[in-house]
Length: 283
Image (cartoon, rainbow, N blue to C red; front, side):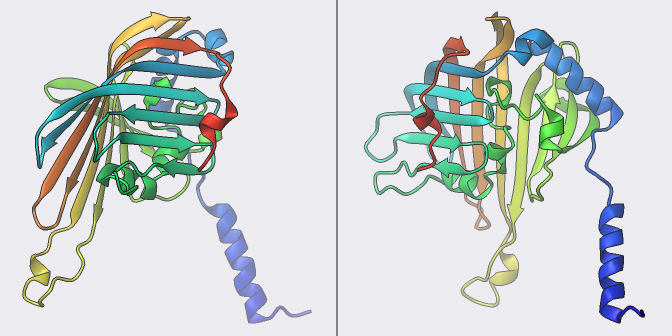
């Protein structure tokens, strides 16, 4: 029986789909990830990890596009692939941030007085792969993206050594299985293999200005998130950072830039505690 042209096209498409290269981890990235995991704790300790709660103080600062700082508190709870990060301050207009992932769906709270989301919250809602991949919070999370690369099926590529603020770090480019416009880079201390920073970069093309003359002058809107981890301490068989700095920058096409920062200092780290399932409900 002769195949129709449509059948031939379908057959070729199926064949090509099987020939696509699978996402992979290159050898140097694999070696660095293995060392990093060893820096967290023994394989036995990691295999028995079910849940973790980190509580501490938090300071919110506006670094660019305003000024001011206010103290609050932070709670980072995780269980398996689920997480709930609360960054809380007591002000009338803005109450902080809350990000939840149930391992599949995500939720970003509206924390302004009118229930709208902050610039940071709005961005993370749109780019929620940061939550779903277990990237946010780094090794604080039981669902940390590097804990099981086979589950994530991400493409990890060793990117060499980079100079970051005068400090030489080893870098891995992280490409999630699901396509994203984010450029994600993980950084590690070359001596300890501890994960010390993650950067996320994205840009959005400018729209149309009020006049044809002004449209070509519009610049893309650029976003950058930085997570920095430091002051490592050992407790409950794990070596984890006790300080977490989370910074968000939005650079508008108009030239206006705003940078905010959350500085979190952990004062309590609890491992394998029983957590109420409602902590991870998507609202």
